[in-house]
Image (cartoon, rainbow, N blue to C red):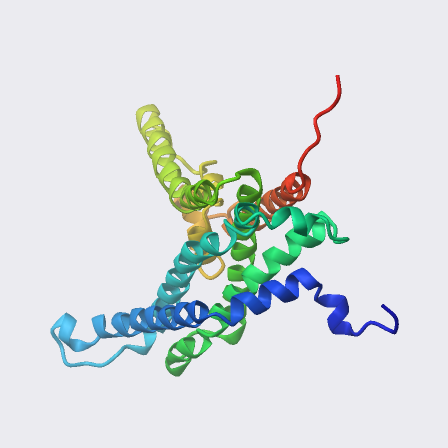
Length: 298
């Protein structure tokens, strides 16, 4: 191959180009996008309907002061949908190639393991990013009533992208480690469920244990280390970006006897570095094990 490479050739390698073309041109992708937008739109309209007079027995309209609640509701709902869709897009990208017996052919190319893993992850998350950006018109409902700045909307979407990368990296890792797609999908959804549900339930359980201990000792609880557990929960981390009181409540630093000091850190400040390290580790494991490991000679 001669001549100077274009910027497109430098950024998009053959694997990435093939994956994007195959994923974007299918009818299934269009249907998935349509149903996703319908779901988000219906959730937004349903929230507004519940706050209109018929539900509360009055004849008033939507209260503009509740636009922040609508924004929080849409943000959490979309985060849950991302957690539902991302494992399905990434948990089969390597095991699927293995089952179709095309992985060996892919590994014989000159592309490195890093290029293959990153290209497949980017192509899968690229579709998810398209879906998320397509919901921007729905958020315009919030801007009609005010209370939310464009900067806050940008923060929410950056948080979405980070969570997508985290879940996608673990989906790729499980897809690399397990030979069967069904197993990798189940394990990936199990991991996602543990991140979203187990961390919250563990926080509630530990908080109850700590409260009973202080109640039995007759001492005031002005600080609780259990807040670090809630910092691993994506929903709590997302809400802590806009409501600092959530971090105060998690660490119990809101008590009047404690002088209401700031928490040791905001929940999102713990969430991002911890999961960034785990994401890098998951990608390194995927890169290490995508190629067959040769057994050492004794």
